[in-house]
Length: 533
Image (cartoon, rainbow, N blue to C red; front, side, top):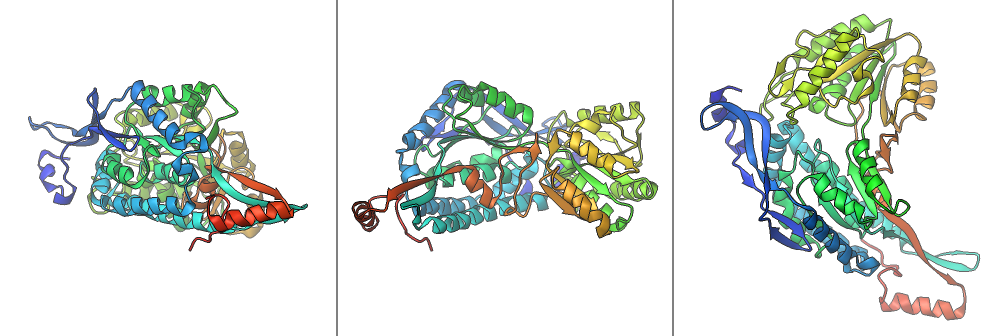
């Protein structure tokens, strides 16, 4: 980006520093008067002296343990050991609160999208998609909860006992979202958690943090005090002290398994703590000899390099049959080199700057290590470095001596492995610590059929002739081993953040009269056959 190019940024995407000086606790937007942390974009623009430097986007509170415990107390009081207004509220009333929030959230679409582009360098198209997809997710969750509640609006009878079975909340949730989808995936934790009657403490990720600021007031005005509490700062100052209290009932985190384990270890009541975790993956693409190469390469480009490969669902390694390896490598490398790098707002910019300042160096180290153990960069532009980017490097041949073979690179590096026998990639998948998804490319059903039967037992989603992905959000999103704990989707997340509970009553005239009076009196929000429209 040249010095003059700052003037070429479309007016609608230019940005001025935003000083986030508030946080949300107990229904109040409180002013922060302590230390702050500056937030920079890796996108470089001219400073006052005309030198190209990371762009200052604003600042956030660097909150301390005291504030974390204040938020925890607010969430505990709002839950009230199950007696609070929110967990005992009618489902219809909680849904009304969520509908109000969606309406208010939509008002901030422009600034949130702009911050997605600047903070995490997501291109314009994907930034708009993330916002709109999140709105759709919330609306779909509202409808899913209505359907779930409708099915509960009845009594069952078994063995002379009536049962009124519903789903109830679990308690206080600590919610920690990822930087790569700081709105969508964070809300895929937070929204189902609170809609089920839980209360929450939420801390945004290090990157993609400012975009939460415009939504603080929407949260404040939509939910009762203490239901949603939003803090800013370092995890060791906020998440760790909260976990050490033992008061958290559910840890909801999308991130790295090491972080999840560290936080679990700090909780003193292990059997109390429930986990809803979306973790790392090493999703492979397996390309059979009869795969349609043109289609396969298109899907593999998207799978490996959409958002620079910074997705847990990205294809992190490609297994290509030896009979087609040369042709695949040549055509794939050519297509990678055609990809356009640009600023997020630029038309057709597929590749954009990396938001993490240290990521280009990490990528270079991975490449250097792979080359050391025998790999070559087979695309012409591979590994070209700038201050905030490393052009995608296609590495071949890759073996198990290399870091990139084992680590989730989460960036623009594509390791390729040639195989002779299909058991080679299958054994590698079985031996890895991950088991989220796989992409299988081919057409011979005599080979595909048995492979699917095996792959379905190694991962949780088999993508036939298509790249790995999360969506549609109504489908299960989970993983085996270190890739996930519990499951997230529109339907599954409601169950992940709740528990089946019920009222039982023996079939006697005495009890039946009481139940009938309960239903007619509307004295209980739990014992009700109200049908949500």
